[in-house]
Amino acid sequence: MGKLRFLIAVLLLCLGCVAPDLAQAETALSNTQLAAKVSWQPTQTLALLVGVLEWQDTSLATYTADNRYDQQFHDILRQRGVASDSMVFLKDKKATLKAIKQALKRLLAKSDKNSTFLFYYTGHGDRPKEETETYFLNYDCDTNNYAATSLSLKTLAELISKDFKGRQVMLTADCCYSGNLNGAAEMLAATGIETMVLSSATAANESTGEWTFTRSLNEILTGTPLMQCAELELTAASAADYIAYNMACAEMQLANYYLTRGFPAEFVLTKLSANPGKNKPHLGKCMIATEDGVDYKVRIVDQNGKECKIHYPELEGEPDIWCDYSELKDIAWQTWKVGSKIEVEWENEWYPAQVLKREGFFHYIRYDDHEEVWNEWVAFDRIREAVETELDD
Image (tube, rainbow, N blue to C red):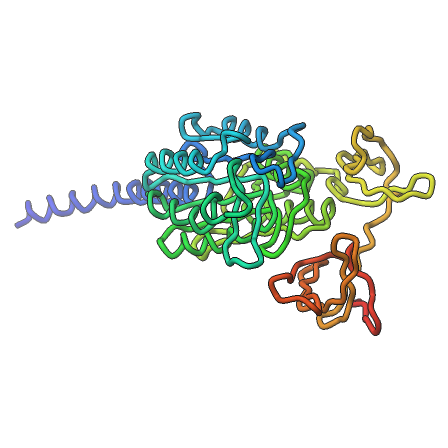
């Protein structure tokens, strides 16, 4: 009996010595798994990029191919570690509906439970007033028959949910009505696929033909945003704030950000080695510079004490210059109270409207003589006062 007690005591002692090491190992493993769960893993990412700047249908406006930021986005993904055989970039004439569907099927077939799928589109997005569907226009689309010839966001979600074996998707788009990706995200979430959406416009709004959204996304992924980054981590939430500020100031446009319930706002897209805005409190700020009595929108791209280097986004080819911060003025944002009667500009005509709700400096309005399908978000640059309109303090 004494010998048995001795053996048990030795066993317990050994277990007591080993157990803390096992617990620490399990904790370390748990922390590693947690970090992987909330951080983007480029090596486990499958990506489909579609960039269309010209179309077979000549009724669609084309865009210049100068400074293609979608190509830069592709190159950044490769630099971050997305494998070449895990990414497809379809540009212009190669971005047919058939090619997009084939690329989706081929990429998603490579997925496993640890995969992340990233989708990006730039070009024309359309939401016909007589339909409930939103379409991203592939090169060979027919504007007279979107349903049969274009990529609907419903179809996009169905294809992903059918073949994707992972549990995490990122949907991004730089085009009109791209906020309707939120509906696709909800479709995916219903099948257990948690999704993040970043896009240049809301579900109700057109988008500009500029590259502000894609350029901002590129700056996030390369760790070169013009902003304060004290936490040294660029999360989904901080990326959304950065994009929203740039879109608001540069384009007077409300950007879109959406997470399904299980996608963490603290999801880390980029880890930084240093704060790019250290000792530069005005870095990235959009302001007004006045020259010869003319106001120009500028952005502070560098700072040295009170001296700021400013960029003129609306003046192509204008060199960046240094000036004293005191010479710049804040953008004079204006807001109207919910319920206010206003007039809103649309294609150089003014229409009576009412403010239904407000988000920051943007107003969701309904035109008095139009159905709800025409509702949209507008900033002060497209609003003027109507009779008895009351400005919000």
